[in-house]
Amino acid sequence: MQLSELFNLFLIVSAIHGFAFFFFLLKKKTKNRGILFLSLMILAIALNNLQSWLLIKEFFILKYIQIPWHLLIAPFFYVFLLHYLDIKKKFFNVLKFIIPLFFISIIFQVVYLSFIKDVKSDADYSLFYEKYTAIEEVISLLISLILFYYSYSTLKYKNHLFKEVLSFDNLKWLNSFIYLGGITYILWSVALIVKFYLNFDNFIVFYYPLRVMTTLLIYWLGYELIFVLKQVKERKSIREKIIAKPQKEKQNTSQKFNQITSYITDNRRFLDNLLSLETLANELQISSSQLSKVINEETSQNFNHLINNYRVEFSKQLLLDPEYNNYTITSIALESGFNSKSTFYNAFKKHTGITPTNFRVENS
Image (tube, rainbow, N blue to C red; front, top):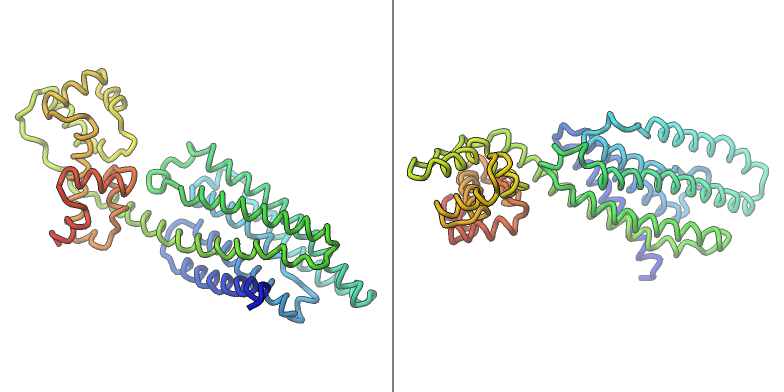
């Protein structure tokens, strides 16, 4: 198989998978409209790759019109981000500007370029059309880079606007997508620069890395999103149907320690993955050294060990509940107050002697 055929295969395969992910996401029952815009972004990438593949196959219609699907990719992602983070009211909806521009571009091609074709030779028209689509690409790239920057800055510097979302999703997958998107835009910029430098002749090979990257983006984003949506749904379900508060400890400890443990259990403070000795001491209006001393004297444990014990006991209730049999260990870990699955596994095994998976199997 020649190199060109291999890269062309990337195009059609990514397009097919893009369509599959689009229809899968449409069927997902979620109240967040952002998922609709993300599925539209994946569809736009798939359609753009399909059009590139058909262009190589010299599909006759593409001699007269090429739909600028690439113009929609970044705007759909940006609008998805605003909806997913539930901050859409604080920012301008760029689709009000982009959608008209998209259709104006199509109408311009149909009307004006059809007229140009009638007055130019086939060779001159082909070069003219190549220059036109290249300029269109440059405009699309500039718009995309602006929206890419705003997406990046929103995630990095405006996280105070979406603290509720962060309680369900740490957004690591979105940050990773931003970095992958940055690489994609670098590849696209290089391909466009070379395209102009070579005067639109024998430039297609420089688009091959871009095709591979868009294929990987569809694969990565599709599968990552499936996992994230499942995890967020499970965590929300656990939080909405939270198990009854555990019984208070017997009155066999000092009054001060009993006040501390009552506050922790009554307010479910152990479910806060950001809880620290200093934070809890401030809430109890005592010094952190005094809090640490009381815990150590009554339990011979440190603060972290005590809090993790509450978290493990809470997670055991979730693992034993038939309602959560199909929920992932990660969702249960995060909703029990742990920062990650690995931290949960280590704490659970330290407190029980077995892993959460084995505990669930043995008690099923």
